[in-house]
Length: 406
Image (tube, rainbow, N blue to C red; front, side, top):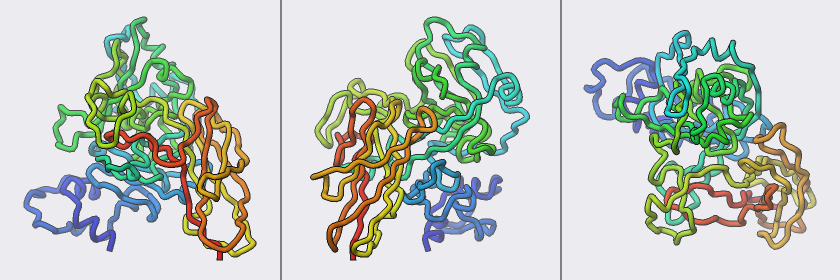
């Protein structure tokens, strides 16, 4: 039933993406008609995703995991969230794929082929946490516009590629460089080739970090198309919108990058706290940089039934943007008391950290297990929803699961 409803609501562009070719005379498709080629097709097969993943939107494609699906220490493709702003590029020719480095603050505009990037620069592999800035948006009240992400728009895969700083050094950086902006091959939802669906960036300090890479492999294989094949910028610890997919260019700027979704309320929050439902002027909004400290219980699945006298082996992950996680705790009494979990060190900087513990319950009945992480700057997750903002960004409230002891 879910699949039938999804296909029924799909658009012509979605049919085109699913089929992999333009639908000639598509403008004459009868309303509610599904092309024969799609009778055996579904989005999970298209993107090689697990069928427990949740589709939030098909134009553009947006899909999230559920907490229990993210139990792996390294996120596999089948459980990795998809966040797109435009239409996925078609007919990719890797033999002619180019990356151009330009901008006001580059000494020399340079263009590299994919083969040159792979052969000229040393390869590095890092496990990097990527989280949508709007992860957890569904909890905000008044509701915030946008995809109603719950907790599953986060991942931590292995990314292999070349360091951005090595490429920028090769091209030459002027002293007045303060920002980079990326350019990609995806198309605006309107089909207008003169509009970019998204073109964001990061300050030079982030661009020049060792872990900021131009990746061509994910978990040891070519990056899946939905995640940026054949080349993607990966800037872990910042909102995943800073990690541009289908990368075709990097501009070195002498000002804050002003590409699509860098202004207004896009990936920006009020510089100072505001009352829920307030309208905030653009000049009073600040760009999101490092993501806040956060954690996720991945086992057991919420709704678990436990026999009286038994304990559960609680586990999950914690991360904190640019920082590390220094302490992980859990509560079974709604935050009245907290007990520490075993917390592992990250594989590398900007990777999430795994936590585990054994939890017992005093009697039969309903419980909630809450998880709270504290970062190396002593910032702890709020027990409930943090400050409201117009687009519902940065919800890092404690993750909670329901448990019934019988």
